Length: 447
Image (cartoon, rainbow, N blue to C red; front, side):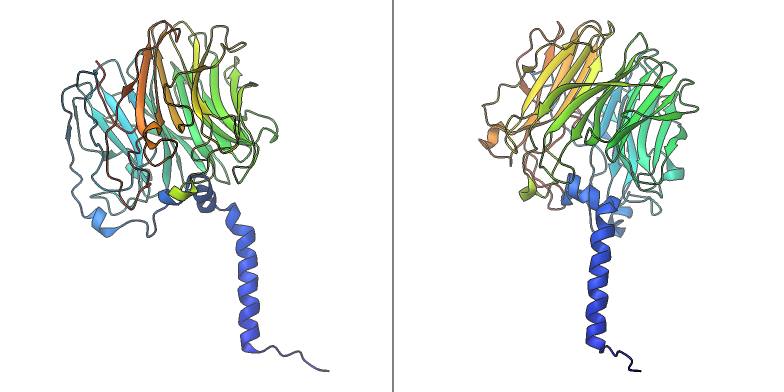
């Protein structure tokens, strides 16, 4: 009987083919690959923790310059003076504290055991005039991959602070609570999964705490009615037909109803289909949910030339509510596949059953790129909105600025636009759009 003999070069070739085949099957299912494809290469730093970053001083107190005639202070860099810091969250209480929470990539100064990224907190106790040095919010978990920051203040007492993020390669949804202005935190795991989740959104009112997050093509929510001590979890949409789901905003109204806005991408894995903008509502404490389509956007613009992923500039919707229970939404969407998108506003006074016609709130020329909406409301009809657009790029997407408007009558009329940002030279190790800054990434004091 003849024994088949395979030469060494052929063996090597077969091994390489097998390895490539396995990689083609496994890699698209890894969190690293999904992060790279969805958000872009700029966020993923080669080499992880860098020794030169760890050896830097962790001290970096901030003093903000006085307000300009526009009512805003000049933009001021916060955090450590090292790259990379991504996707910050910001909140303020009624007692003069401002909280900034963000993941620090590449290492944390003074913390050799900290992962990349690690969740960092920086606090002001004087309405944003000065900030203490940034610190690790959860030292016990800082050796684990931590991303997607959320931080909110309970609107009932105006003091209690809640934060949320993803941990352990996005398999754990963590919720933290502070009753002493961020000095100490009680941290619990709201949910733990066997696979990666993404984009948590946190909403709080009194003892009711909600956090929603995507799990591939479904949205999940974890809810607590004992101030975040214990959580239960439920699937928000009962099937995967709504597309790759990414939450964008949430609120709890005074009557106890909870709402979350999110985007459902029909073309999973690429900018190939519509993006459906939904609002989900629960009136029974998060046990059951109903979902309504508010708008439909065409496929996202292509910004791969700037190392960003297929959905980086895609449609997203954020939302809030005021003390009267009126709901407000702000979102970016487009009518042409891969074309420029606009910023739209709408509101509902009947619990989300009906919505006002969408209103284009940007004065940028048609064809200007728009993205990254942010919205806040207070009192009865006081609404503040911000977004980024690339009007100065004249149809391109290489120059972005942050714009702000406000309304005192629920969006019936708006103040003039204020350009909040100024040029900042991009680091070669960070996202390469010049003038790039999130509306939540720069601290400015509005008088």
